[in-house]
Amino acid sequence: MGLEEYKGVFIFAQQVDNEVSSIALELLGKGRDLANDLDNKQVTAVLIGSDVKGLADVLAEYGADRVIVVDDPELKEYRTEPYAHALSSVINEFKPEIMLVGATAIGRDLGPRVSARVHTGLTADCTQLDIGDFPLQPVEGQEQRHKQLLMTRPAFGGNTIATIACPDYRPQMATVRPGVMQKIEPKKGAKAEVVEYNPGFTPNDCYVTIDKVVKEVSSVANIQDAKILVSGGRGVGSPENFKILEDLAACFKGGMVSCSRAVVDSGWKPKDMQVGQTGKTVRPHVYFAIGISGAIQHAAGMEESDIIIAINKDENAPIFDIADYGIVGDLNKIVPELTKKIKAGA
Ligand SMILES: Cc1cc2nc3c(=O)[nH]c(=O)nc-3n(C[C@H](O)[C@H](O)[C@H](O)COP(=O)(O)OP(=O)(O)OC[C@H]3O[C@@H](n4cnc5c(N)ncnc54)[C@H](O)[C@@H]3O)c2cc1C
Image 1 (cartoon, rainbow, N blue to C red):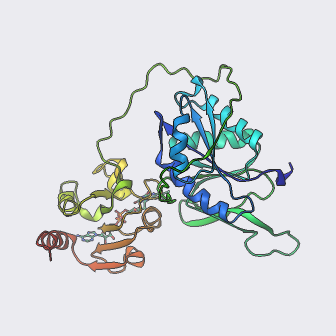
Image 2: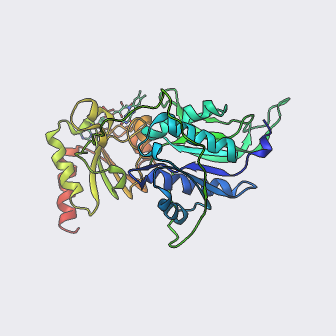
Image 3: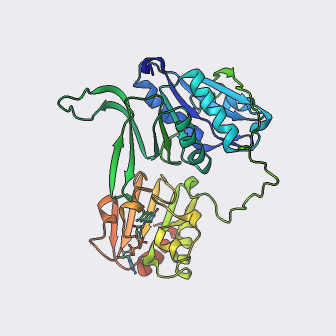
């Protein structure tokens, strides 16, 4: 494999029902950052679907210099086989240096399959991506490669953080958690070069037949969209007591309630509301952590919030290590008092 043949940062521009997924725009933002540190600064979005060409402009506004469109009726709904064929064919044809895929249900299925087909590695579920030297520190007798993709992710159940590189194969592939990377401000009217590419699709016995699509109606709004999150942990004590958190959240425009995994495991709140390593990654302006101890797996999903306010009766709770403001005391007294003061405009 001639590594130097592989150039540019590519992102898989996930779309569902002909609507670009938020993760695609987040990957474009990160792709732009990474490309700025590489010799080839082009960011390419790979758009796969049926009748999707019109979405290229959205991708351009969010930072794509070029959009490779694979458009075919076989790609109407996501199915593993035709999508894996489409993306691996694009990689073989256009040879990206870096290929980023969202760690969504679709991306987690597609990414590893494609990496195996194009014979490269993949680091799953990354929370940070940088360009740098690998090994990070020079090691005697081992060549230190420059401008490598350094892929960072929690490892061993979130108890440590690992930085992984793929120096000997291309592309360097990663799946990236939704909500971690930031979109750029869209540039209205921006245009990208659009390249149409169709490797041809011949259904085989790996092509799943979709008889019916049943859409889950989510009972909760997406906590990743909230500007202010009032998050409760086991310390809230009962599902009924979440009412005091809902009252606090209702004081703010764009306020929502979220929770820790202990709350979901107890059956108090649905999984959609869970923040953390195995839940959602959130980045609100303000994150209230109420009755949450601040375990590393929880912190992994919220520590990038602009302001963290912790309320906990245990002054040694780890949440105070990452909080900007901390209140030590009983949440049953503090939260209603806080709500009252905010309502009164204090
Ligand atoms: C592989 C793996 C993945 C995981 N993924 C996640 C994840 O995605 N998200 C997640 O949240 N966890 C995750 N966990 C679980 C995590 O390790 C913790 O167990 C969990 O976050 C604890 O939830 P908690 O803080 O609500 O409960 P606890 O740890 O029980 O903390 C409750 C806190 O409430 C405080 N408290 C109690 N009563 C009051 C009161 N009246 N007033 C004020 N404070 C009070 C206590 O002092 C305590 O600090 C994961 C674990 C593993 C092993």
